[in-house]
Image (cartoon, rainbow, N blue to C red; front, side, top):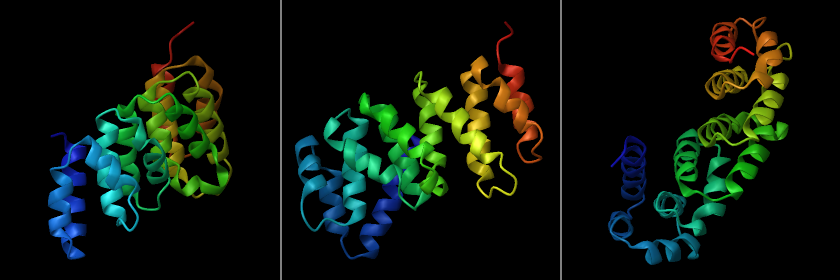
Length: 192
């Protein structure tokens, strides 16, 4: 079991036990793919159960988890976003990149853009660099409170090492919280 899977399992178990549903958790923990798929859409399921089912299905490459994982990727709870991003990166669904770009670049939901940005970097899709450049450009506005999203963009652009990021990374050098990471990202860009 990977670290992300272990963290999710522990968190979900605590939520289930806290809600007096430990027996339901145990059934879901032992469920097969078809049982997980049924639990994902069954009426009256608590959020922890849907998240657990979607995570396990996504990690197994089952596309039935896609919609639930995208909703969780945009959740207000960072732990749910992180587990959804992890499962989406393993799902292998071609719709994932488009959904991550939409969530990362939606300025009305910028407070929740950190994990979609990180997912784009993990996916290494061609659409990732233009999306990260767009998001980072917006984060460079004076007084922007979402500097952590900007930092994730800077770090991601450095990891992707695409020359198209050079102009916005040079602009990020003027922002104290982003400057060290921007210098490092610029150093990782290939020379002509």
